[in-house]
Length: 347
Ligand SMILES: NC(=O)c1ccc[n+]([C@@H]2O[C@H](COP(=O)([O-])OP(=O)(O)OC[C@H]3O[C@@H](n4cnc5c(N)ncnc54)[C@H](O)[C@@H]3O)[C@@H](O)[C@H]2O)c1
Image 1 (tube, rainbow, N blue to C red):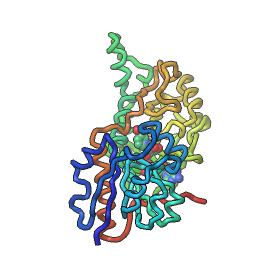
Image 2: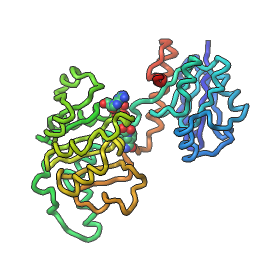
Image 3: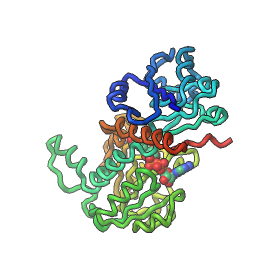
Image 4: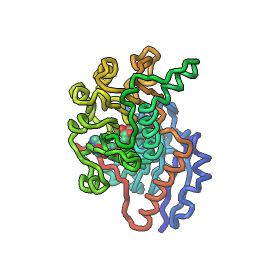
């Protein structure tokens, strides 16, 4: 029996989605497209913020939108919110979200209606890991710093980190969080002949050891690493994971790299460590306040490389995400089992 897959389109990705031929080859998938503009509400950034803060049921939906979604067995969306009212008819089996965050759905109400919430984990793993490797090298080798000065006509090849701007080959790289991104960074660093230390209480330690990595506690990683790469997920518990006490443990030559989330590192402690040369330097793509104000103390320090939250940016991200979700739906059609299920919130 065929199943109806309702894809909610957004202006930016509508044409790409159709061109990609989403689920064209999956037998039994009856794909329909609906435009998100039927939602009587604001769109864009404001809409995303409302969805994140107040949930999908805070919007005014048209009856047509709810009816169209209710008729589907599988709903696919990127940023458009999905009203819980769509689950009432009992047709909807799953909502597949074309990103990692799942704020589009009220997970508790979905669970109650027996609707699975599916996401696309690790979809940014390739761009973010490649970017992280770029930042490590840029900071260690003064690439951005050298460019910045030379573009202003200043020829300087003697930077403060000159006495310790070592190579990745032979360095000790500490990976904090060996998930989708961290695992790829670890793999590249290992291939470049670095010693890899991993702190990750969620990972399979035996599998990491088999890859040649050393699994350690966070304090030990801080003491031994030449480069510390933050790849943890931000939750209430992980806020300030790296605090003042950790900066005291680090080598005075250590570089801290953060392409994950700013709040994972106590920003005041990081600034103190950089200003007072308690560490060698930092490369940062994420900040507590974004866009970073021109008056930020990070601007103008001679031992940081800063970029404007660019790590996940790549032009083929929609193709990567479509493939992850299309494969997940295809596997479900073949096996009857969903992968990439996001569990309901703990009560
Ligand atoms: N700068 C950017 O543009 C950008 C883009 C995408 C992702 N990110 C960030 O990069 C980081 C890594 O992303 P990822 O895809 O590798 O994440 P992931 O979920 O695959 O792994 C994250 C790691 O977080 C740790 N963790 C902490 N609390 C956890 C919990 N409650 N459950 C499970 N794991 C937990 C684990 O060590 C895990 O390995 C995240 O902070 C993400 O927000 C940044």
